[in-house]
Length: 155
Image (cartoon, rainbow, N blue to C red):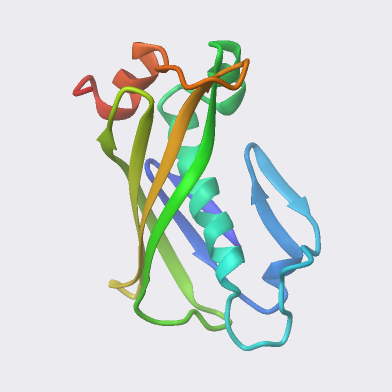
């Protein structure tokens, strides 16, 4: 079971064959991504970054704002920065939990804090900053309803 979503938390298991399947919004798409290093004995950081990305998408969808609805509201979110601390590598068979929440919001950008735990110990901490753009690609505040849904109305 490579990844499943629970509220704003995702449970993942990495194995040397799990790199053949990567999580996609709304289901699983079997692929062999070019960056997956099968047989390396540990998860490729790019694969882990993909898990973090999907955990954010899952949290948005669970708050009632899947990517399709965000786009229909005239907003696009682009990744502009990761600030990641790696405390330990993930090995085949490790089961991890990804906890994600909106950490900081500004007019046209926001930051998620994401923590990856293995056996109750944090192994990765990531601050993921994205920019809000309109459909023309210009910085633009997102609809307040998106922010309210992701922050419980605290935005």
